[in-house]
Length: 376
Image (tube, rainbow, N blue to C red; front, side, top):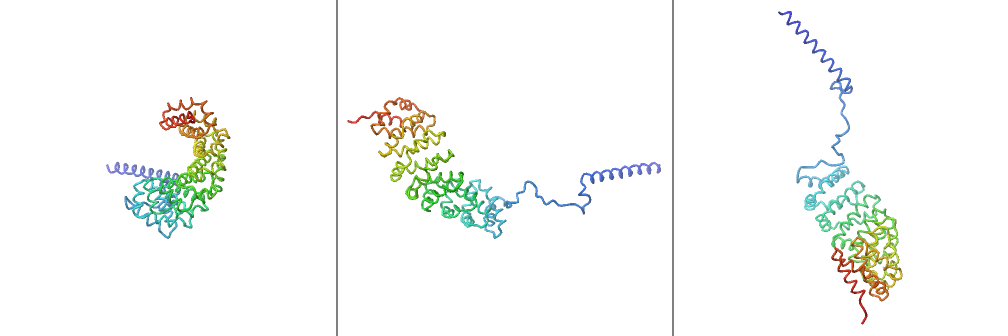
């Protein structure tokens, strides 16, 4: 009996040794660098879900106060990481509100002239994220951010300048923001930047100017904005042509601007009525609408053959283009020469009385009355 037990035990031990031998041999072949604890190597690479450029975020409402402290750190890397984390958090409007409450903006303002390009880039990016929300725009206005952005208009880094112009573009959409830009005397600088900035930034500048010059155009006229904008009306980019015409429209809403537009731009605006881009056509028609208020503007537009081109726009499906064209034609109908030509096309305006847009209907009715008017 003992012999049988000993035999069984010997077989089991032999099989166990064979199994261990095979296992460790297989392990050495599969993982040759990790045989034994003494030879284990620690990888220098972080896990793929860890971003070394962002600071660890504290839980809940403690996150923003912690980041607010870290952006004031003397260590540039700490500031960079905190700003990177903040960029993510502020996409939530609730976090923007909390950031404003704890005084984040004042600390961000101190980072705008920072020597490190990444700090400036992230700081301007954060301000842009805040400016995309109404609560953020109001907070930036209350903290007088616009004057602090002035120096970044000449930043050596394109991305910093782009972020800055994105902030200004968003801020100018509020009357208070546009007023702050005017008060900071940025209009002359913005107009001159149209000569040197890349197309992407030019588009942002034109958007800012359009909203600001709606309130006040004297600073632009003093900088000879019309000459620079005329060049943009022939730019290869349709977006820039359209936005430049929109800026001229806003200048033309002011008495002092109408004369300049009449003298220098009307023939070019008339030519843009046949532009390949419908938005450019609509913006040019809108600018003509204001430029032809003055008698001289009417004469110049008639001389440039504006009527047949405007009539083509009235037939377009774009309501904005149609409305602006009808109003511009109404201006031209106030003089005998224009009225005579438009009487032959009265059916075009009668068709517009069935337009689904109420604004187009009203404009067509007014145009018909003006065209059919006869002196007593």
